[in-house]
Image (cartoon, rainbow over all chains, first blue to last red; front, side):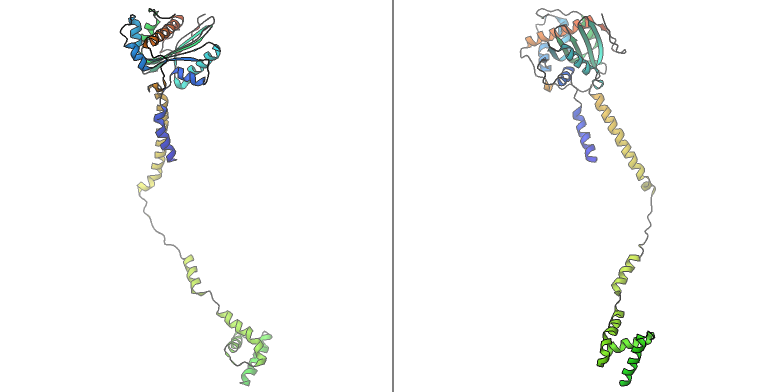
Length: 161
Length: 168
């Protein structure tokens, strides 16, 4: 009995790493070749933020608040992936809060946040479009003011539509 | 001597008639076990009385007595003084078990809560792009997508109850 207790106490510190939304979703869809994931690590994000030639200052300030990004896309079985994403979003233990949602004809969006105290540590959007499923996941140190800035239409030269 | 043998014969007659007293039977046993020159006609009886004599000498012995005494001997009752502290030991043990359960419960709760407070595990992140410019394009594109998503949907107050908004 004592040995078990000691083992549990030793294992607890190793079980506290949080997983981002896209990682959780990819775990749900293991070995699924329909999904395409793009990852920008904190190291690369720092490099991007330190780029001097960024014309758009709004973009610059937004990127400064970010630590990483993951973008997951699929062009087949779109409702299935949307359902899976909703399932992950609704798991109570990850405590994603819904920030907004929309449904317009065949398009569905859901935007979620995850908070640490009064800061936003993760911003997630997943959408089912007529021809694509897309999940965007940003981690970082964000605020509601960041969301407000993000709502402004971002247009910068060279940004793909 | 003949006289003695006559007497023994008479005692034997009485013995077979079951009329001998204990003393007479003892006399018979003594005769057959001690007498060295027993007449031939009395020899068949020797084994009977010699056996009785030897059988009487069989006892349980001192060792048996000692063993029995050891068994029945009562162990001395030792008096023990039970202090208040010793009386409270079961209570302390119960409290320790309860404290352990509470501690484990708190640890589990802390682990559950801390899943949002601990840094993300970025070790598993593998960059898709080596070129920061390509990465920047991807990030700005993703920000654009989220921005559009935010513009299309109604924004909930983060502190209010989450209600799904349906914009038709």
